[in-house]
Length: 285
Image 1: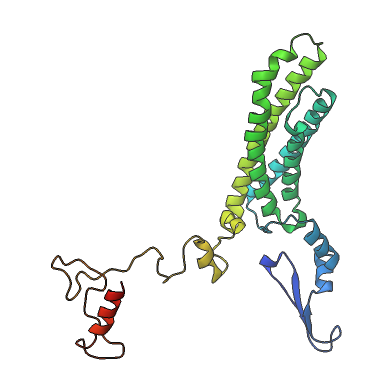
Image 2: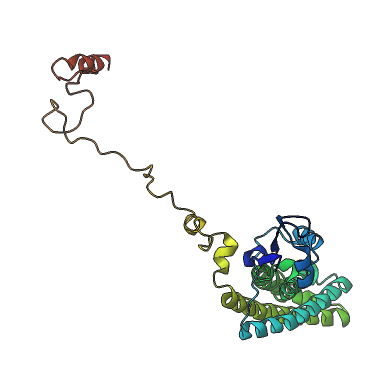
């Protein structure tokens, strides 16, 4: 009854409290330690840790999930563990057999699993940001780093050399590494589809919010919605002013010629005595 606490959904679950005079040392506005303790937040140490550990990207978070999104997140957690095991197995094979020479020795799969787990456990209170980072990285890793830079060279260039004049261990490691790589690619593509499904369901405008072009930010939305367009009402710099069709006293063809007309005296009202200005300019030219 004596402490009014409100939760701002866009302020990453920070409590803003107002304590009236005579309670908790007077009237002030700030972080309410009691409300945070009751909600599981430890106060400024948690906020400091979040500010230090969070990646330097827009912090987006969704708290409400549909039943399908919750199921997709559970599937993503299991697939992330599978991707982590695949990355560890590939790293072990590449360290034991340096001739394999995969890109980053399978460490990119471990990084993908870390991003997915960060979204699943809502690290730093930015699960949507983790999902977006995972979506971008996993597709780049699966298509470019693994399929193009590792799998294609292994099958097209390295395969003949691994089966000529070597023992049985190296060819087996080569085959196992490529099988694990194909499995890792399939797992990451599947996880990317699940991540996009969750984002589209829980935060439909996640693309605009991540890029800073969302129209949900009040008056700033109109400016960010079309960032490459000029301000309204501003004339275009490429428009050229229309020239007069014909000057008084000009040639018979009707084309415009500079200094061909009878000018007017500066400050004067008539045109008869103003020929001095036009004639003087014409003679100087």
